[in-house]
Length: 233
Image 1 (cartoon, rainbow, N blue to C red):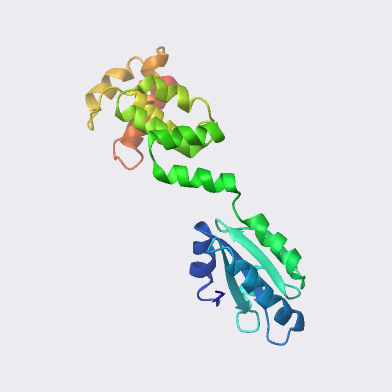
Image 2 (image 1 turned 120 degrees about the vertical axis):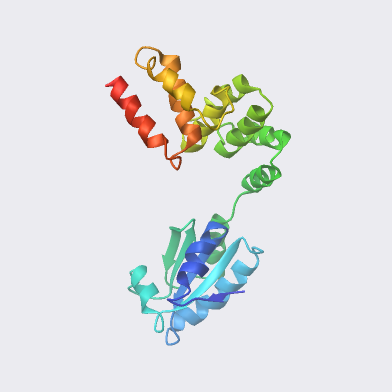
């Protein structure tokens, strides 16, 4: 079923929705003959995806804001959005088999669907199964590392995280694995470490890890970062 989208609902119905499903935007107008030909084809093909691809129809005569956003010069114009970004599109009316190929490209493969299902399970077994299929899958690595840290298997967690480039997510879990002191105060530890950070790599790493666990919203974090910088430079 197609959704009629306006300038006012575009953010919610298209941009926001595209974070959970692919959204195909059909820009059309009542006077456009090719639009009337293409519209039913798009509705039929997208309906067959069982919600994996959502069709959003925009009347460009009534919603010039959306038309300007896509810099539309002729219609019908069709754009596919995923995670708020345009990932594919075409201009003009095409036969059903061409539209079908377009929509097929937007749907996750069988392997991708399997991975998504396993990640949603969130168990050690499911994460390890994902890594058999995709050894560098960040979601599986982070999820599994969190489970390992929770039961104290910190060395395995760190080895796992080292397999992929560092990100905000991996940095936080790695800090949890390295910091053995489950303390939400940390002041005494940080103060003691300050005198060692300049020439002691292990002390400096522990200091940085504790700041990572405290997080940017802790009012002490910025002050300790300044003290660290002063000691190092």
